[in-house]
Length: 60
Image (cartoon, rainbow, N blue to C red; front, side, top):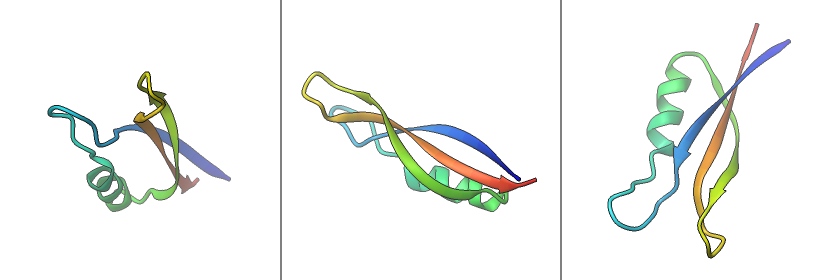
């Protein structure tokens, strides 16, 4: 059986917002989690992705 966690990541955006998915994937992988997929979770008014959930799994 697998346990799953969902971690919110920022998409690359305007102003000072920076994408942080690579750092998050590296961090959770070092803790034994396996990256599964990314699911868009927030959009701006033009349909551009603002945030997404990174899905990780670990065998229990």
